[in-house]
Length: 160
Image 1: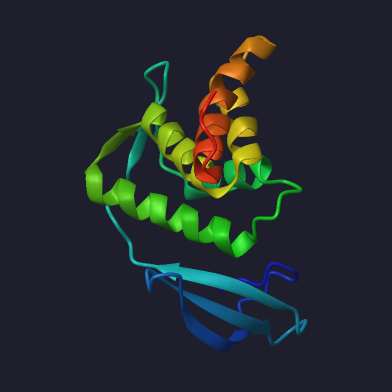
Image 2: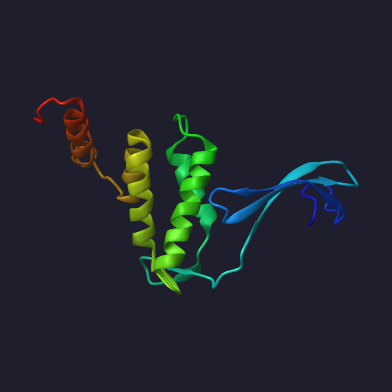
């Protein structure tokens, strides 16, 4: 493994453990040249999944795009990075189980929205506003109404 700091190939593994649901191995490494420490993740190689974009282009699936989308939506929200990593892994596993070769980007966006709805309502509305390209405040209100109604039901009050 190449050191991200000095680019040396000379390192040693300090700690190794399974991550999440044992779908990857997390390794802490130390560079023997510059003594910098870094983390690597090892996953089983799978058939590459391709994402079909709205315009018909096909691009390689990139789990980091999902993670970064979740991270941006949850910025300054009480959601841990570990939770976002776990949600990303769950989505990736679900996509690989359901699709052999290709998945529509629209379906991935739908999965992200579902996960955020359960995770954090503010993050959900943030993501929805970009994903669904809200043009005015009424679209925000349309998205908020079901969330507010379900919140009222959780409190036991009648929905308005």
